[in-house]
Length: 255
Image: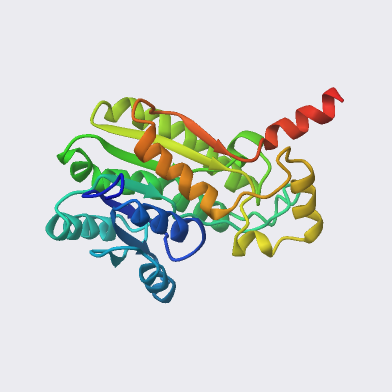
């Protein structure tokens, strides 16, 4: 019996990468996992096939569609009857050099903010009643070191993750004591998205990280598991999973 036996977890945007790894790790710990996706049915099914145990399933629901989230919440209430962990992993971005303000047009800026910030809030709003049903509900927002360093795929992405961390604190205060809300903030993660970055950028990130490697998707997933199983007195916090990346900049200054 795993530490999450009898629990139900829902992971948004779980068709690949961090979402897929998190769904797998939570299932390894005994949770029944609901996998959601926007338009990646094949990837979501592949995630489902990799989960341990029984009772897992897929729901198509984009986090930018509040009506779809409401329908998903009704489905979970009727089928699983509870929700113990909500992982807000769904997000979007596109590489745009920070100096190229014209390339970050209104449409892309709004899409990033709508998905990464409003989407996470809308998911909490939709599933709140289920999270409080049996007490001790948990929301984990997958944030980013970009919120702190202001250095990421584009300016809007960095701003969206800073907003997410601020929202984590606001919701932790507002929903206590029934629901804990925590951000898990990885540094540059070795995913399909970041593998498309130039080798020079990736290598510089590694060189500037004291632990000397990129974050793996399993590193993030196990941080989510630790929050769910071992940090019961923590809420409103941002948990870094970045290999000490902020220390790399400080090390340059002090050496």
